[in-house]
Structure formats: structure tokens, C-alpha cells
Image 1 (cartoon, each protein chain N blue to C red):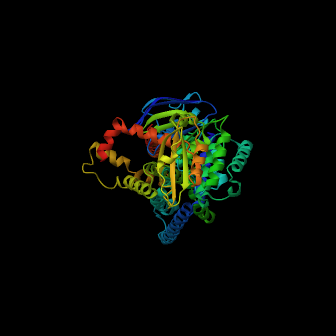
Image 2: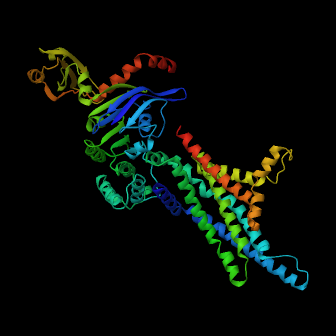
Image 3: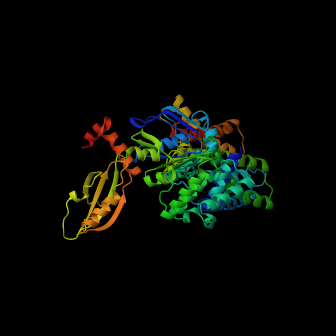
Length: 329
Length: 256
């Protein structure tokens, strides 16, 4: 559905995208992940036919973006990072305008508008001026605009920015209903979002793709051991790490992370064991035997966040990134 | 074509929900009406005096003494208010980044530019239409020669299209409405004054070219009721140049 080959984009001397290639199949929901300035928005704008590339080839729905931009534009819905709105229009007028400009007419337009108002939870504010809407509603109006003509491909640049948690969940569900038949590309720097909505992730850093895979595989790759977090109340006694040294345990470390500051009489350990060995029962027994209180025990899942951090910082330590750093210092 | 009507409709909607158009129209009509009234009173006193010198009446008529000065002044006012009509058109889209959204839909830059220009022309024609109460009112109590008036109104339409196209181009250059208005003021005043300020070497080709660019002569011809093809070519070509430059400005900002 989307085929990007050796795409490069330079703004003068600045290289925004450096030879990136990826494909997206019909019906996939793909997350574009990367830190600020990684090239996410640039890629999306090129996909939407808004800016030309310096080099490379992009085909969307079988059409070359640079040769047949109108054919591509007929088949996409696009939401830029800040929803661009005509604040003097009502929601209805705005959606009608964007529906018409994308080829919907009369009855089809009306039914599409009602459907999208319903889906995006905008029915109650349909006759309000956009200028009077809150940020969350505005974001949803932007989304509704991108989806009103049920495009084959939906390109969303940070679709859940500025929404409250409930709305985020609703919007994610809405995006997921689009998967299957329609292809969705969304960019985000909020990692749980990618985990919650997307099957596949493209991780991009400094204009280069550092990983493309399904999210499960990406996280599985990074896992080298089972880790268990243990919070223990031990009162006045100060146990050493050694009491957790059980068969199967490979490493024990005392943790006082920012999320669990030291409370007098409590300690937090992370216990690592070999892949496939579950030491939780043994650990629980040991804590009780020692006469301590077991407050919390939880397997530590390797999150996409770790993968992301590792991949994007790895890149930084080798090659050109290293020299740039030196300059800044 | 269908896109074009949608785009024109959207621009008109945005015009009518903003107070700018109403204020501009009101100011324009009040000033033009006052000038018309003053000229008519002057004309009637002059013609009363003329009655005494029977026999050799010099050629005075309603068109040259009432409509010509009124409409010439109207053009000067238009020079100041037309930039306010066009300033928002492209700059605001750029500022709110709706231009990006607009162009992610299957429309061309040309359609967007034409849609805006035509919508602005519609607004201008409505303003012009409202001034028709002057000739109609006067025609009710006396006889008017219609043809010079029709030529003058055709001239007003052409002049307006040139002013609007210039303003549209200015609006493509910036994100700031005020800056857009100032740029088009500058360009229009330049067109107006290039005739009266004599260039250092008036006989040189450059001097001649600058004089030919001046809008005043062409406006005078048309307001007198004279249709000269060179005037038509002048206004139409500057209008097309403005639209072309606006198109280039928008396209180049997309890097295309």
C-alpha cells in the first residue's frame, strides 16, 4: 500500500531524512516512533504529497506521490500535528467543506458527516463554532476531517496530543476500527500509544530508520532475562542482597528508583533470573521465612520504551552523532 | 470545477462571518455617497449660473462633472481598502496551517488561488453593486447617458480585479495579515505614483516603461467612459501577473 524507497530529504545543509526505506501493507496500523526532530513529520508530509523529496521514491496506493499527487491525495486522509481549523466555521460547516473538497456530494456527504460526528463524539457540538471548542474537541474535529471520506490510507501526525485519558482511549479505538480494511500510519513520541494501537513500529532517529518490526518482536528482542521487582518491608533490620540469592537467580540489585523512593524500613530489589525460569514462588517463600513483609512483587516487562531508548541512544554513541555531541559540549 | 465552486463557497462564508467586509463596505459607501452629493450640488449651482449666459453654453455634463470626479475618488479609496479585503486570504491559511490541509485534499494550487480571487471579486462586485443607487437615483430625476457610465463601471471591475490580484499576491508572501496589507498598499501606491513622479531620465526606455506602468492614465480613460484596448490589456495583464505570482509564491513555499 505504501512503498518508500531510499527516501532522502535535505533542507539546505540539514539532512532531515537519510535514505529511508519501508513498506506498509494494506490494513496495517503502523506507528512512526522517534524523538523530536527525528524526521517523522517530514516523512508524513512527503507521503501526503505536501512537500517534494530530495531523492528517492514514494508510492502510495500504487501511485507515485511526485508524479500523480492528485491520485494519491484522493486516497488519503491527513491530520497534521496541530489540527488546522477554520475557527470561524461551525463543526458541520468545516466537515462539509472538507467532505466536498474530497469529492463527497449531497446524500453521501450528509450520511458520512453524521457517521463521523457520531464516531468522533462530536454530535453534541456539531453546530458550535470551532473557535469555542476546547483543545480535545478541536483535535477530534481534525481527526473527523481526515476520516470523513473513509480514505484508503490515513496519515495521522500525533493524533492524541492534547486529549484527556478517556478521549485518548476512544480515539485509539476509533483508529483501530480503521485498521483491517484501511491502512493507518500514525506518528507519536508517546510509546504506550504505539503499543496500544499499532501492530508494527518504524523507529526513526536522526533521519534514519533504526528498527522496523512488529511491536511484540521488538520488545522480545530486547529481553535477555526475566526480571522481577520486589518490595519488602523489613523494619529495623537491614538485609543484604544475599538473602535473595536463590537457585536460578542471576543478579540481585537494590533499587530506589524515582517512582519508589526509599521509605524507612522498606526496600526495593530487582531480581534477574535466566529466561524461562520463574523464581517468584521461591522468592516469596524466602521473604516470608525471613520474617519480612512482602509488599509488592511484579514481573518487569521490557517495554517499548526500553527498546526505544536503547535503539536511539545506540545510534548516538556511534559515528557522526558522537562528533555532534562533542561540538555541543 | 466542482472543487472551485466549493472553494469559492468556503471563502465567501469566511468573508461573511468576519466584520471586515461589512465595515469596509460601509466606509466605502459613506465616503462615495458624500462625494457624489457634493459634486451634484456643485454641478447644480454651476449649471444654474450657466443658464444666465444664454447662447454659448460650454460643454458641461453630468458625467464629466459628477460621475467622473466621484468615481476617480472612489478608485483612490479602493486603493486603500482593497488590500484589507485580500490581506487575509493566503496569509491566514499559512498562519493556521490550513493551507497544508487544503493541499492534502485533491485540489490544485491554481484552484485554491482562483477560488480566493473569485470570492474576493464577488465581494467587490457586491460593494460596487451597492454604489449603483447613485446613478439609479439621479437617473430617476433626470436623464443620464448610460454608455459612458457602463464603460466606467466596466473600468471599475477591471481596476478592482487588478487591485485584488495584487493583494492576493502580497498575501501569499507572509503569514501576517497586516504585513500583507502593507505590501499591497505599497505596490498599489507605487502603481499610482509612478506616472506623476517623473523618472530621472524620462526619455530613456526605463523612464518610459515606468510611466507606462502607471495606473492613473488608464483609470482616467475608463472613468471618462472611454474604452481603449490598451487599458483593457493593462488591467487584465496585471491581474494575470498577480495571480501567476501568487501561484508561484504558494508553490515555491511547498518546495515544488
